[in-house]
Image (cartoon, rainbow over all chains, first blue to last red; front, side, top):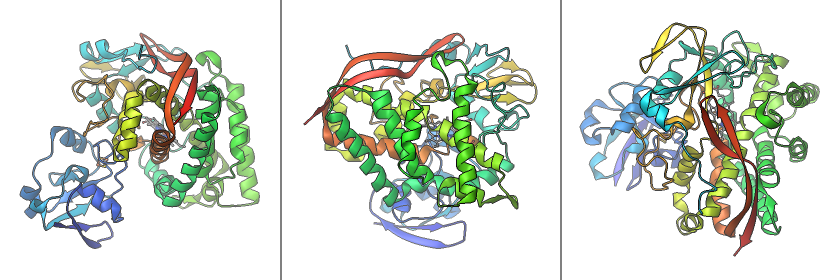
Length: 102
Length: 387
Ligand code: HEM
Ligand code: FES
C-alpha cells in the first residue's frame, strides 16, 4: 500500500491509499478535483497534470520521452511536472505529495 | 481480403521527406503540416497561428469565408477570451462522465444495436451511425429525444453537399433551426444547453443571440461527421477483426485503450487550419504572414518518430499521444462525449454481436491537394450477426 496526498487548486489536502494501478486512476476514482484523466491514461490528454513535491522527485522517478514531450507544451509546466497517469502506485512512492495543476 | 476497413496513410512520403504538403483552396492555399512535433508545437503557438482572426470561416478547409458570417465559439476565438468561453462550457461538456448520463447513453445504443441485429442488412452510415450520433446529442444538449428525429431527417449532408462542394442552402437548414430553438428557449427557458447559455455571462456580459448561435452551430457541426466517421469505421474494423471484438468481450478493461487506439487510427477529423499572423518557419520551411497552415492530425498520428508500427491497430499500446482530438488551446470540447459513445459502443458490440459481414462499401475519399485520404464511408452495408 502507498499513501498519496493531493493538494487541489482550492488548497484542499486529500490523502488516498492505493495498492496498484496508476495515480491518475486512484485520483479519478476518488473524485480529486482537477484530475480528469480524459484519455484513460494513454498520455494523450494532459488532464492529469501534477507537480511533485521537491522532496519526492527521486521517489517518483523520471518521465519517459513521450511524457516529457507532452509536458513541454502543457500549460504552466515546470521541472516538477508529471502526468500522473504515468506514475504507477507501489510501496516505493508511499508518502508522496502532489499538487494538482488545474 | 481484410482491407475494406483499412485507412492508409497518404502523407508518409511527404512527412518523412519534407514535413509538409500543399493544397489549393479557393485561391487561399494551405501548407499542410504533417509531423507530430510540428503539429503540436503549432497548435500550441496560438499567437502566430491564429484561430480567431477577422475573417470568419477561414480556418476551416475548404474555407467557409464565403458562406458563413456567424463566428463559431470557442473554435474561432483566441485567448484570453477563448478561456472565458471554455470555462463557461467545460463543465457542461464533462457531463458524459456522470453515471446517469452513461446509463441513458447505454440504453440508447443498446436499443439501436438490437434493432440492427434484427435486420437483414443495414446501411451503417444512415441507419446506424447517424441515428446513434443524433440520439446521443440529445443527451449532450439535454433536449427531448424526439429532436433527434429532425436531425436524422436532415441526412448526412447538412454541411456539405455531394462532392464536398460548399453549399450555403444546406447549411441554412441548420442555421434556421438553431435560430428558432434559441428564440424558443428565450421565451420558455428550460434546462437545455440553449437556455443555459442564454442565462450565462462572459466577462460580465450576457451572451447574445449571435454568440449562443455560434456555440450551437459548432456543437452540431463539430460533433456530426466526426462521430459518424468514428462509429462507421469501428463497425468496419470489427467486421474484419472479429477476434478483437471477442478479446474485448473477454477483457472489457481493455476498452479504454482500444478506443484511444481506434481514434488514433481513424483520425475522424483529418486536419484544421490556422491563419499565420507573422512571417515564420515550420520545419525549416518559410511561411508568410496572412497565409494559412493546417494541422494534420491524421498524419501526425502515423508519425513513426512517435508511434511504433504506426499503420497497425494495436490495442496494447500503453502510450498513445495521438492528436485526433486536437492539441492545446482548442482541444476538442466534445471529446468526453465522443469517448463515452465509443466506449459504450465497444462494450455493447462485444456483448451482443457475434460477427459482422461487410456486403459492400462506398468509400469517402477527401482530396487534399497532393493527397487523397480515405476518412470513412459515404455508405457501407453490413450484416450484423447475433450470438
Ligand atoms: C470522434 C469525434 C471527434 C473528433 C475526432 C473531434 C476532433 C476535434 C479536433 C481535432 C478539434 C480541434 C480543432 C482545432 O484545433 O482547431 C476539435 C475541437 C472541437 N470539437 Fe471536436 N471532435 C469530435 C467530436 C466532437 C463532439 C461530439 C463535439 C460536440 C458535440 C465537438 C465539439 C468541438 C468543439 C466545440 C471544438 C472547439 C474547441 C475550442 O475551440 O476550444 N467535437 N474537435
Ligand atoms: S490521463 Fe490523459 S495524459 Fe494522463
